[in-house]
Image (cartoon, rainbow, N blue to C red; front, side, top):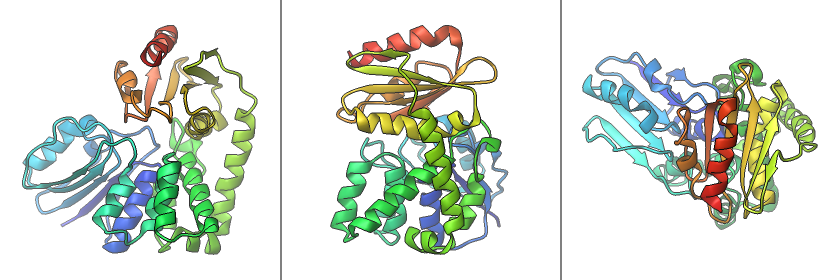
Length: 319
């Protein structure tokens, strides 16, 4: 018998798995990648009697592989908050799916574990840009101001580390970062005992965000704005957290951050207005490589010829 842990390489995927493995330690085959690498389930080579845990990747985007594994009698635990499609009915599937815009996979796992490792769940929620929701839960759970700030900071850095067009763009490969973090029962223990890793993430984030701060919008209106980042490593790393920051700074505006790719096309991050966190996945799904959730979504390969059409789609949706 073998165990497989399949998870998104961002803060939400990593912190979700940390909670589960602190609760139930096991040696497993890790399958993950950069944040945009979501068709991960097809990499699982399981046999009857094996188990698979799937975290923070769209069920809809992995449906064929999921159906195939279920038909082989593979037991699957699936927690996620992205577009799911019709959830298969199978005695082998244990689904925990919540598409609400105010939750994330780590909070779903937190509920499943009855808050046992809540600090890790909140770290993920902060990283997923659920700042208001995470702060509220943190305060009601008894965390102090310093702890809340640390969870917010670390979640942002872990999430930031997951962005890139390839693993070479990242400071730490997600599986490697997970292996480091899972040794600590709380994020505070990690920060106290592994400051070298924390500082690498912190300094990289600060330097990249400083570069992004000088950007001017390519298109802007009262309701929407579009920014273009160059084809450079720092830009690929910062695209997601920069999108999150724009959303926080301008809560009534929808944002799109496009990063130039080597093929001349664009990697796209979409953030719905924080005041109305709906529509991002609806917009992204109109393009062949798009997907995500209501508040935040992306397109993996937007042709240059579609740039004007994309912005018109974004602008028309929110106008």
